[in-house]
Length: 204
Image (cartoon, rainbow, N blue to C red; front, side, top):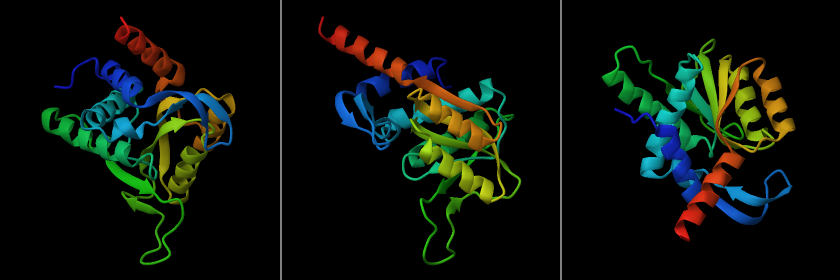
């Protein structure tokens, strides 16, 4: 069974492996005194497992029902795989649990083959969850939302691991999601506080 403190364990790992203090330039063009690279956690063996189960627990807590989970490559890639795998594991141990298949959204359509922009699950009318690692302006999240909508899928919820709490970013994502809830596992300040706590404990 997945321990009940999955989210707490994930926060601890994120703060230790993904959070850095300093001066950084963001993809949005702005600057920040901290940086969060969630991929060092979502691609970590234990971090990936925790990510998958924490997001499933968040969806269950908010009564979100969906058939698939997807997002923009490449930040969403390990999240999608981990959530899909976690749902399969749960379906084996909990008969009532639903499977969540995965799909990935390319940044541009393929110039060869089928020319698809979405790889993996894609069925018109299906409720899906859009996932992302860090949300600042919401740009990558919105690209995935729009691609899913263009493919005829219905966005049931949007989930990010860490929200930097930029008001314009949240508003833009919520507008693109057309009423679907925008959920987060952690705020950047929560990750920062845990990072600082770990530094202080290590210095004692």
